[in-house]
Amino acid sequence: MKKYDYIIIGSGIVGCSLAYFLKKYSNNILLIDKNSDVCLGASGAAGAFLSPLLGIDNSFKTLVANALKFSTKFYEENFPQSFVKSGTIRIPKNKADEDKFNNYIPYMDFPFEKKENGYYFEIGSTVKPEILCKELSNGIEKLFNYDVKTINQSENYWILNGEIKANKLFLCTGANISLINEDYFKLRAVWGQKIDILTTTKVLYNYHKECSISKSVKENEKYRSSIGATHNRFDQDMSDSSYNLNLKDINFISHNEKTLKIMNNDTKKLLEKANDILELENVEVVDIKIGARASSIDYFPMVGNLIDSKNSFKSYPHIKNGAFIKDEQLILYENLYTLNGVGGRGFVLAPYLANILSEFVVNGEEMPKEVLNYRLFKRWAKKEGKRL
Image (cartoon, rainbow, N blue to C red):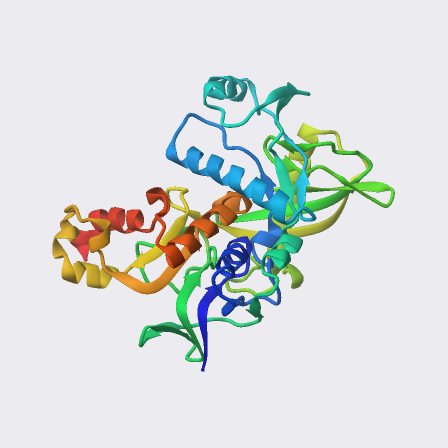
């Protein structure tokens, strides 16, 4: 049975970023994905826009601002071929939205100026998802078309499907959390759609209003731009469609009528919203991708150790009644970590959090408390503990 220092399950922007930073400390890493290549899930369907979060000061806004500074510099210095520095014009949706923007001015983290009918942020940019993920994971051993069904701990190793051993295991599986058998670890799958268009209209910047439009690149006699993204939360069972977390290579399969109906409707909505920003002429839709973003209940990412709820309750039964307990007292799954729940800001948050997690695992550096999984467990235990 082959052994690895680190195994990462999931090769989207999160998994590939983590592989990049862990590679500084080991050449014995395996990156696993059920798909046939990197970036074929939600990351491949992302517009990959990098832009500031507006609002009054709070811990989530601070997290995004710090991540945006780090990731923008990281991409520009290390992966310039994947990085498109374009600037972003944020356009208020209406008068109330413009008033809100003006109220946020004292709390702006980045310089801006009025431009056209909105506000221009120079730091706005995009990345090329597929190329970037390949560059990030370059030199890392990969195992594609491999579906991890079971993970079990034995003799300080994590064993996958009874076949592969890891000293340390990282779950970067996005909205599919079937490998995590803990009720407190909950994610919402938010399905997004991105379309690529050819148009005779040259788009000079990224734009954001009710959708986002990317700066265009010349392609033959037209200009290519990406438009995203829709936000579909399905309460009903969608397993009979392509909106199914268990499917592989989701954007390379033939979609059934149920799926196509939703996709065509979303394409129409995206084009309408885009034309509310810019008048796009002679539009031809040349590509459509869908993917499920993983969003936590409180919007913060879910990073670090996983708490073993069963053994924590066994050791400290009083926490079922909402009693206080220090994080370090909780029982953890040894050498098992998550980096998940980055939502629609994956390309902003992933490198920043991957660096933080790798430094925590290897060198014991502290991580921001607001992203740790402890918070999820404690809220759940306080709410649900008495019923258990």
